[in-house]
Image 1 (spheres, rainbow, N blue to C red):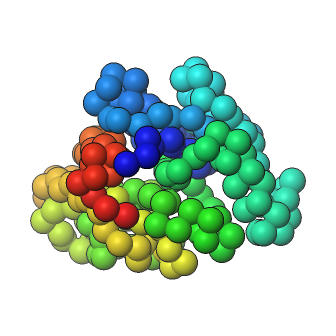
Image 2 (image 1 turned 90 degrees about the horizontal axis):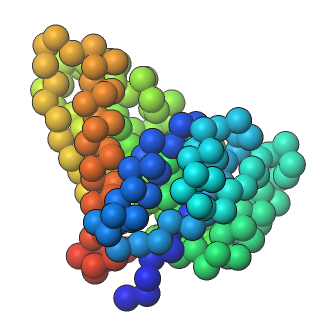
Length: 199
C-alpha cells in the first residue's frame, strides 16, 4: 500500500490533529503529516502545524467566494504535497463536490457521538453532548467515518465508547469523548496504513 501522506482541514484548535501528528512522529502511526489548511486565519491549528513542520495555508471563502474555486484551491495545495488522505479536524465547513470527487473515499471525519445517533446538520461540538445527556443515553463516544455529500452519513470505520454517568454535564462528557477521539483517530489512520481498514 502507498505511504499515507496526510492533509488536515481545521477551523479551530486542532487538538485532534496534534494527537495524530504526535503519534506519526513517535512511529505509532505509519503516515506522514504534511499539510494543514484552515478557513480561519486566526485558528490555533495553523500554529500547531507550523510548530510541527507542516506546510500551512489559510484558504477561505473570503478569498474564493464560489465553492468550486475554494475546492480547487484546497486541492492544489494538497496536490503540491502529494496528499492521499484528508483528515477533518474540527473543520466547520461542508466539503464541496469537487473536493469530495477528487478525494473519493479518502476524506475522514470524527464525530463526537456514536453515529448514526446524534448526527446531522447542527450536531457539532457541545450541541451533541447536550443532546446525548438530554436523551439519557448510557453511553456515548466518537465515530471515525468517511465523508460523503450528507453530514455524518458516510461509512463508519471505527468507534470508541465512553460511559455516560448520571452526574455528567455536557462539559464533562465532552472531555471524556475528546480523550477517546485522540486515541481512535490515530488508530483508524494506522489501520488504514496497515490495510486493516479498507476504504
